[in-house]
Image (cartoon, rainbow over all chains, first blue to last red; front, side, top):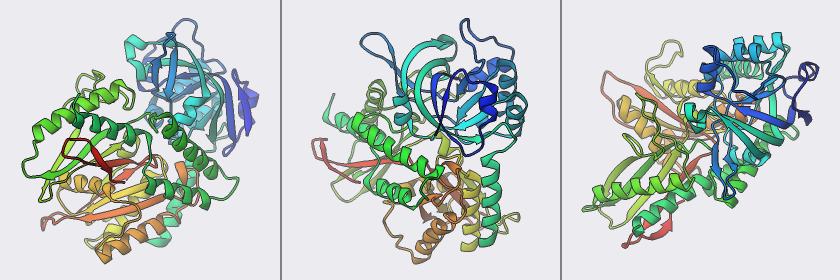
Length: 191
Length: 292
């Protein structure tokens, strides 16, 4: 298990390779369909939010307010990432992301951006909403709540040892491509 | 709140937070099969931990609490209108309590009123039988796995799939290949051979009401179910598509008559977070027994 602490340097990211298991500590920002479309169309991040050296999490969490009035993350697994494929490369380029967490993998444009700008795609375990919510220790802020609604807002998560696997690295390798090609070849033997 | 509504609320809570015992056993067997120290094994360990955590905290296994699909079997005279009203009320309360995410969106306006009640949500399928029993089954099916479902029209030249069981096999295995890990595998397939485009998918989902360890009464389909699981697990797609030993936990195949001109194979993919439960209701609407 490789420990990562945000903000993350380009060197650290380029040292990662497909198949590495990581545990992330620090800040994650959530962002899914609405956020990607907004940034792609030239939208600005809200004041005080910076993705430089940071990690964006494709996630629409279940968040409640506890008795003390603090946000509490109740369930927070990853959502399918491929929907952001048209936009992700640009968000990586323009906002200095070092990591994107989601599930299911992404395509060639994102893979190319990872290589060019020094970023990795991190696969979290789909459906593991409780294990991942346990890693979210505090939810200090939310942005665009009114504009995009709770599942689509940018939530700021303080996480400790959030587990993920590098499935697309900054060297042009994608586990998703490898497994697809291998399984395709294997299936040809049985049909 | 009446007793029926209470029972349905408890059914929703338990379905959302607890994996049925037959599925949990299949997941533990899959964890055993993965090679030690691989990312596939890590994924299965996290899945197993998640199952325990959700149950203990009585919170959703997955944040996508999915399409809400009820199957009700009851005697002649069961008041379906009153039942539907109770089910909708139970869904609203379950959403307020956080057993369900605010998950139902107006397709035209994009508005989410936060109740989970609207056109098509929840879905209720009523079925009459001669016994006095009222049995209510519930499936919560997430969007990630629903998106990788597929419907094939045979013959399919690209797959070299003809209108026979071997053609069906090729179509089903193609659906597994296309899904890769995107449906949160290891998955469970519900399949329907035949029907029309609507009934085919509907019947494929109904297969997911079957226990994983049951046996198909049709020997040909039983063989095909076993073959699909065995072959899929040789493909090396593995949990989450990370590569590994278990790609499918099960495959359940049903059949409907078709028109001479049509030959559909409809595949519904269910994620490992296979949320399915059921209750048998007592005459007063209380829960008499759990069905899984």
